[in-house]
Image (cartoon, rainbow, N blue to C red; front, side):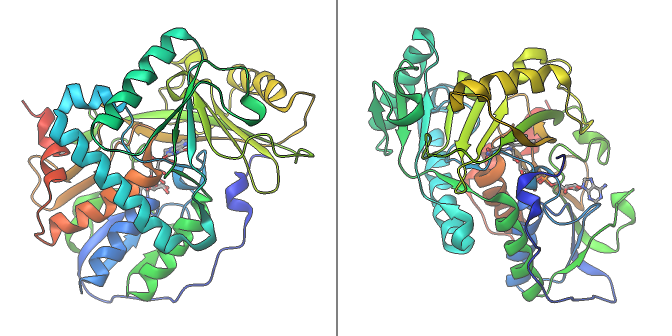
Amino acid sequence: MDTPYWLEEDVPPRPVTRHERRVDVAVVGGGVTGCAAALRLAEAGLRVRLHERRRIAEGASGRNGGFALRGGACRYDVARDTYGAERAAAFWRWTEEALDRIASLAGDALRRTGSYRLAADEEEREAIRAEYVALREDGHEAEWLDDVPGGAAGRFHGAIHHPGDGAIQPARFVRRLAARAAEAGVEIREHDPVRDVETLDAERVVVATDGYGHGLVPELADLVWPTRGQVVVSEPLDRILYDRPHYARQGFDYWQQLPDRRILLGGFRDVSILDELTDVEETTPTIQASLEAFLRELAGSEVRVTHRWAGIFGLTQDLLPLVGRVPGRDRIWVAGGYSGHGNVLGFACGELVADAILGRSSPQLELLDPARFSS
Ligand SMILES: Cc1cc2nc3c(=O)[nH]c(=O)nc-3n(C[C@H](O)[C@H](O)[C@H](O)COP(=O)(O)OP(=O)(O)OC[C@H]3O[C@@H](n4cnc5c(N)ncnc54)[C@H](O)[C@@H]3O)c2cc1C
């Protein structure tokens, strides 16, 4: 019951590599970020060792909702107002390209279904309508729907269809990434908690722990807040009601139906939002009760819950991730803080931090520089 649905699959085999001496880069964290960074660095010829406290994908990367969405954690129109039109447009395009690259690596772990961003009331309709208009003005693909087909028909106040988005089996994808990284020469050490990043036998260290590494690098403790998300999965329904990821109420509720017709539903963090600012990875009766009540509504009848779990993600003040060198530390780099939106961003930022270490420039490095909070 408490094992995330995604992690029940068999782990694919991967080669075992050992580096005897000091490596070029040590990566802490074996989720999507750490695996993407390790792969990129190894493909560039660097010697890489990845340390994971549990096993690959057993953090948020194997505990999430399986939404593979472009963009950032805030609405596009808000991003435009906050970071500037050009930067927001470039950031969105960069994540669209990352989603295409994920598609080329993921095989059957990614389905390009599109996604529905729903309005739960008139106020939210106005907000997402502004997002839709901004997306179209800047040439991003998006469609406006006054109603959506399927199980959500007649229940919401409009929707944006994002046709390029997808549904991902996140653990399958990340385990495949890890296998590729191992084939490229990355040494993967599982069940290997890092207690002090300064003692790692490496020229440089990438901290890719998102919500889980609180305190590992004290300079990041106030910048990335651990936040809990909870999920339930139902028994298989007898029909498909939701053919793609759906999300509403600023993403506080999100659900999709899996290929075996189960409903996966997450969210309702706002029911006790302060209690969910924690890195304690356990479900709570309050949020589980809200999830179960909404699950019944979505299914249209009583339905058995077969899986329930919690996971931790890293939240930042401006909802943008941190990617780059940790201010004041020469050897220590970070990529994390996706504010609950890390399946695509985590992959992109893992590659981005690797590129930064390799001396490759990118406009995203300026936007995501952890030093933006230093002043
Ligand atoms: C419930 C939930 C639902 C979500 N839904 C979605 C979604 O639908 N779509 C989306 O885009 N995003 C979603 N997210 C966010 C997304 O899962 C994360 O942003 C993403 O997985 C982060 O990947 P990561 O590799 O950076 O971190 P993680 O996958 O969390 O990996 C970090 C790893 O670091 C390891 N670690 C920590 N400390 C140490 C240490 N000291 N030594 C060694 N290893 C250590 C951990 O064990 C962990 O495996 C969700 C998150 C949660 C929790």
